[in-house]
Length: 112
Length: 116
Image (cartoon, rainbow over all chains, first blue to last red):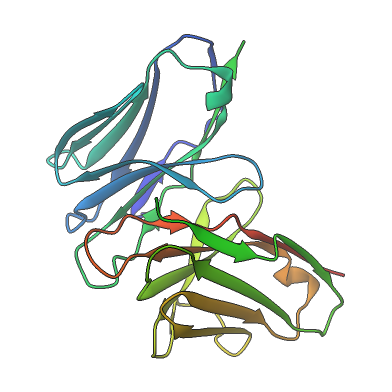
């Protein structure tokens, strides 16, 4: 079993839709949870970062962490064609290296 | 915000030669940098953790003699692919975390290596 599971998609939605992206994980030691957006042939860009459980909102993006279920989500409201990219969840524990474990990424396509 | 610069963005080299990729943190000090490899339509695979002033820690299955990592200063880590072969062709990405605080990782823009 992989430490972090993420549906690879692709996920295709019309412009304006609410997008829900999810990851599950198995390591209860994870404390930091992140979502990255990666455009083709570019490095990942940090979108949201959450420590432990709870919700965090930033503009059209909301990140949720449910540690009891080992489940994290990223919601995108009013999706735009420019949101089309691969979204990667990532998480780490609290050891000194803060090594990140990534999901496989979900490819999102927002149709105009 | 934190900026990580990676150079070169693309490189083509001949089989058997070595290639060096640089990763610089431009506006913060990075005690730890990470090197990843990414295959097309796949996620990032951590290759090694680079610690300033000490030897890198390699992930299982990564050949440390092939992928030489040097982190000589708080703002620069280098990855050298030695005796490159076509199967080393990939997208290599570095990331850095600042000296203090939470792991707010910043990634470089990546280096596409093609070995011919």
